[in-house]
Image (tube, rainbow, N blue to C red; front, top):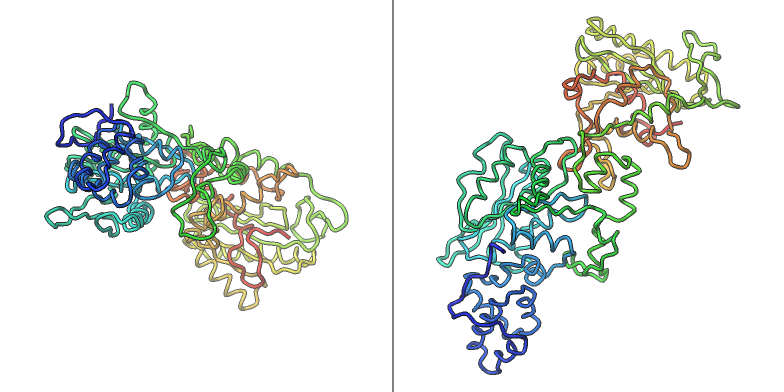
Length: 599
């Protein structure tokens, strides 16, 4: 039985009349007197759809009188929609919904906890905002409070609340919104904070305590990232009285024991009738299922009239995502299927891609030469390279005695090992710079032998002592000791390029480097092979397939940190990151060139 029912009126119980009696109650000439009777009939109707029909059966002239009587009986102008949130969105806000959205909104009436694991692009934040606005408007001002929270305050402020701030004035609802507060006027003329947003530190046990109100709705947006202590603390707000919670978000990809997953499991347990789980997969999108949906009413009016399905994921997005990550990748499981991956995050580069790149046959024929056949001092590699190939070096500088100073070289599509050393010898910046200079000279000789039209380019990790090494190499270029282009790379900076429409958007430059190399190693469906030939050592090959591919709550891709890898017993991927640097191209220094392009 629903916990929330329309407030009783002042009249004695009556039998709900059929439509003809409702029409009879609207005798011409006595609008104000009969409005109370019509309001009484509507409020006692057991089916929400019957009450909602009043907007079609009552004229625009009569409606204000009926609404005034509804407010007198329920304490709210919108009390008629107390047990139909979806009706409020469609009738009062004048917006469109599709089937899954209606089911989620209306479940808040009948359940104390509603968990919604959602895929990408299904409108979860849009939905949460409408739930908040509905809740505080269908009860008397001063008796209902909606609290919204998320993992980070910027998510509360910049994702959920802009929706609320837009809806309230557009629908002509009472009150005003600021950044994270919705204030409504009381009958006494005071402002009452009916809804507000906040975020709590992960270990703040008291964050969800000391909040009391006759009617409380807690909305947990981006629920997949909520810390366990905060999540379990929500029970403090749901004890006694009329209180409910809507927890909605993408399933966490890298936390197999998250609070949100536990809540969703509880919602599937028949022994927990107060909790319900309603997943919304991207495959449920009307653009994929073909569900007939209303026209969009959220976009500005224009001649380009369109349905809600235009804003939903389509089959092309699903197919591209699966091709990019793989059918069983945690990203696909979470973002497409709205399920919780088992075993944590997947790998940035699958080991099979590495194995394939190690075993590709070397091209032969006109224009191809084995490096060892070019007669260059110190060049013993027997794989083939192409005439005119662009030669680049990647240099990862050791941060301390436990890391390695490594150099890898790319010659067109072939990547090869050049140098690795560890220990105190790497603490001397001059020695490190001189070793890089040796590799620059060797690369220049190879470039001259192949007739490469491009200058040798050297990408150096500038973090730590790498900054000094980069400065020395730049100074030596100015003094004529070498002809290479030196590019210092700060891997902790923001990406050089960011495409908001990309399936994978890197969070930092280090993540961008890994994704660029991943794209080059990924097999092309038409040929079955990637674009790189790896002629590297086993350590580098293993390191390339070690880091996990993660995602933050903002939807950006993050590569597992060195600290996290060390914590689970893995070595720092210094060799792998030198491989990445040899391929990675930030903003070009001279002529335009696409990042990751091979010549």
